[in-house]
Image (cartoon, rainbow, N blue to C red; front, side, top):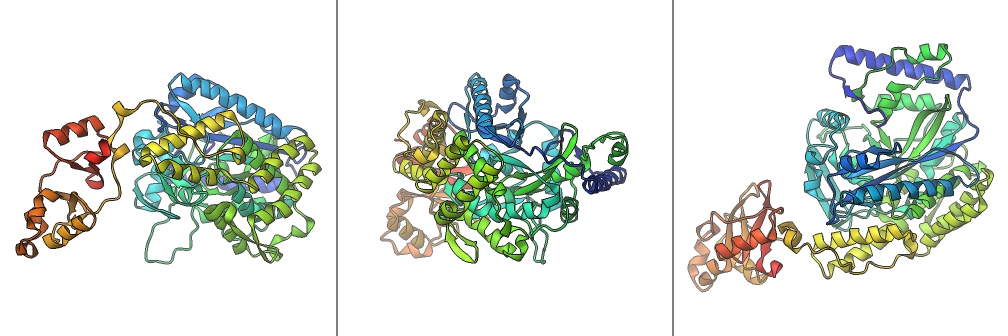
Length: 618
């Protein structure tokens, strides 16, 4: 969201002024389109690099504000959370060595940021979803202290009328409940921009939609959230749900999510596209506008900012977003590709960008009027297939079902080479970066490497430790710069000794068998025998911890027929000791020793989240 100073649309006077500005902006846009005022030559490209900051234990930092001050460079801006920052790269004319030049600038800026981060004992990670993010880092304490983020979060929550529900199912499954938009901060992207010709808007935008699935499939890099294997590009599901203003009801609800692929092919002009967005999505925020409106500025020969239109557009997040801007005093339109993830290296990111731009420019003539050739739902299905399955996806293309490898190698790569050649992009650059895409097709992308490495680490380490080691490996490989197709599985990094600062959440078991307080003692005794369990948490009907049962308390009942007449309530400890995931292991050991315990339930916000036993800490 480009506008930094925002406010709520809280009264009728503010709403009246905002909508006057919005409608005036649309009228000015239509006038500029009719008069052919838009810049089209030379076309430009641009990009935004989002990245994560981690502390010395490879967990999310809380020092983005301080690191940003140390960086002290105009290309850097804050993001939603205290562990994210963004780089706005310089736009460049689409010709010659523009991609390698952008790559050089990106590396230089990231090196500068890394040196600044090291002064705060932080490191930079470029990845779609930071592996070590967990629930504690999604509390409002970790929101960047800028009013615009809180205002937007409150506005979305108010429109929705209830807290956020997050549910993603892949190989594993995750169900989470949240009261803000902080889950958006889990998503880290490499957003790429391509200037377009307004006179060919519908064809160009629809082509961007049609190629999204195949392009995404080879670029996925976000297969996990909180240690769960979900989609190959989990960001797609996570971002969609993190800022969803739709309320779950029993009523039919036709409204689109604010983050989405769209409902159909674009028709008409760019102004028509923006009108459709205003109809579909409620305006959430406003700002203090310039004294003169857009039409008045046009009359004076000034290209207007279209502040109200851009403000609305900044709160709607299609994966291909149409954007308005100004270059050297002239208006331009561009498509912002929002589905490409950060990382795993800057080489991979520039390759992804070049691949997308090349295919955009290489559109065959027969793909004009795409709505006559391809069903929109097939394009949408392709996109979500890519997000779920990555390089294993199958695509609807040219009335056939094609696997990723065939479609990329035999259709999209040749198309990309042609498109880049038409734009006079350096042949050497094209061969280098598109060669990385070809290598990836024949080996692995970021998602595949991450899943393989994490599974290997889990054979030896608890999940939190494995995730830290995975994050450390990401940093090491990314910093060396070798593209992901050449990465081997992660080796066992010797991480900084954290034994003194280890927390219960690092070692506890989350696969817990529990009993209900009204269960029979006979049933529970059997459960403990079958599973060789010595410590069993007991829950009430609201799934809150109400007791703890130990084998010592029930083993004497094994041969006693009274066991069939007893309930668990009669033999459990009704006031058990417990710890939180944030409790230090040293403190947990002291509690266990003091009370002669072999196991402790782990509770967070009155809910049982795990169990720590003596076997876990020895």
